[in-house]
Length: 335
Image 1 (cartoon, helix red, strand yellow):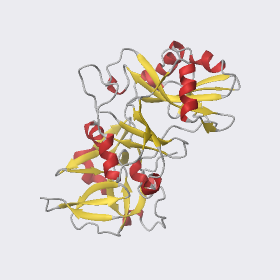
Image 2 (cartoon, rainbow, N blue to C red):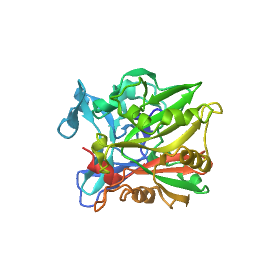
Image 3 (cartoon, one colour):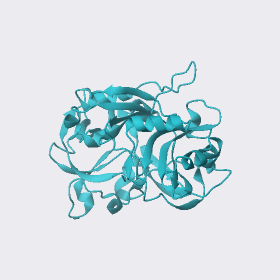
Image 4 (cartoon, one colour):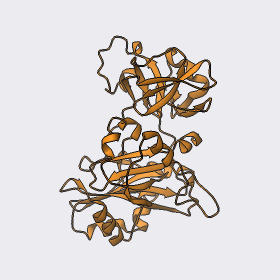
């Protein structure tokens, strides 16, 4: 699923911030963000830009320069991050609907391209870059769960389901596949040429993943997170690099394996899953409670140290529902 960064929305609520005279807090779907007092009212249409949006250098966005100016490769722009203002978490940016300049919009549609907004991607270490053999294979779904804030309307209906909970690791997405006898290694967006210098391929060689998948005698992919030295600051203090897996995908049937099947498969391959925190989880009463639960120490915290986890991934046991809940404490610590 491609992430929808910018969309026309209806403002669900506007409330005062205690002790603040010039700002207030708006609610859009499950997101809360700080706005100028009187700029919007409940029911207004506006353009909502999610966190991680990278806005182009244009006059209408210059007010962001002091707080948000960044370079992404050769490109200059303004990166939206989670912030705290007067004690209030603020995630994203609300812009007047007039910025769409007369465009006939549909609520919820992706208008990122219309405003020249792309996703901010931090610099990638050379060892993770690699040479592209092609785009990510079409016969495997990409790994990108929806954020719970974008599912606020569905949240109440989810409470009738039972879920399992895993920790979302702060690493780099990796997919290994065997399809028609061909072994492949993918980053989040690319199918990569084999290289001794590439970390994804190094881990594949170290764990003998090609031979292990070939021995299964079927077309299959396993997806996980690469963690360790040289990856996202190696918060877990690991030596070398390793992969922790969260998905197995039957390519011919075009379906994800259920939880029990997945765990049995990864164990049979002598590989590791991501930390599984709860196998019989029911959702809390409110989305705000869900966001609070996402905060906490990582299972992989080094001895004597508490590392804030990136968040949680919540999946129904039948795999029909899945979403991620990113820790606000983690987001506030991002550089």
